[in-house]
Length: 99
Image 1 (cartoon, rainbow, N blue to C red):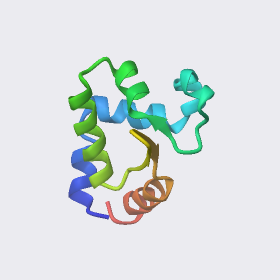
Image 2 (image 1 turned 60 degrees about the horizontal axis):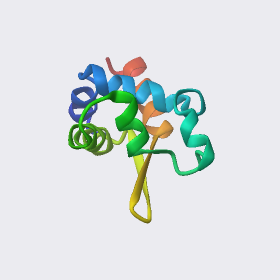
Image 3 (image 1 turned 135 degrees about the horizontal axis):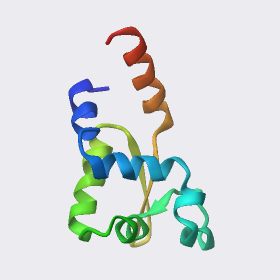
Image 4 (image 1 turned 180 degrees about the horizontal axis):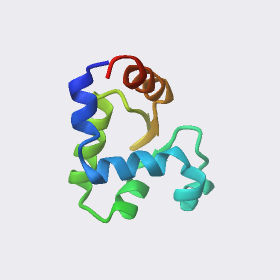
C-alpha cells in the first residue's frame, strides 16, 4: 500500500463520498438491485448519483483504484466498482500502529 497515494485519494470530498456510498451499495444505489451487487456498482450509477461528468467520475474512480481502495470488474461494455475491504483493513492497521 502506497501511503501517499492512499491519503491523496482520500483528500477529495467527492472521492470520500463515493467510498462511503460503496460501503453500503444496496442502500445507496437501489437502481442497481435489478443487476445485483456481486460485481459492484456500475460507473453509470455512480456518475448519476455524484452529478458530475462521466470523465470526472472515471478519473476519481481511477485514482481510488490506483490507491487500491476500490476494485473494478468489467462485464461487457460496463465497468463495476466495489470497495477493497482488505485495503481498508490495512489502512486501519497503519493508522493504529504507525501514525
